[in-house]
Image 1 (cartoon, rainbow, N blue to C red):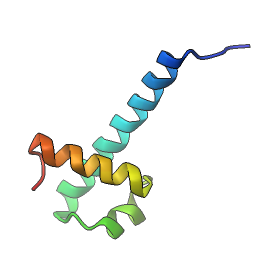
Image 2: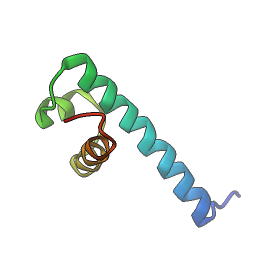
Image 3: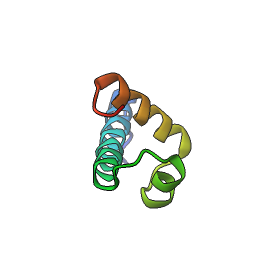
Image 4: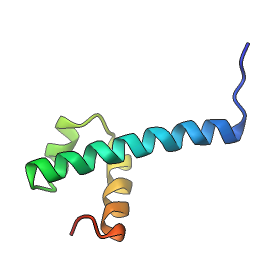
Length: 64
């Protein structure tokens, strides 16, 4: 039986977050819009994660 440590679990969550972040950024560049409802309907991401991703992208200067 394999049991993940806390650091391994965080690494997996971080990897999943970065994949979702890349998908959201790609979708925004493709569609040219930052419309929450459109993103939520087209990308497999929950609302809280989307808000965190948009905040990160804005702070990094990747979106306005």
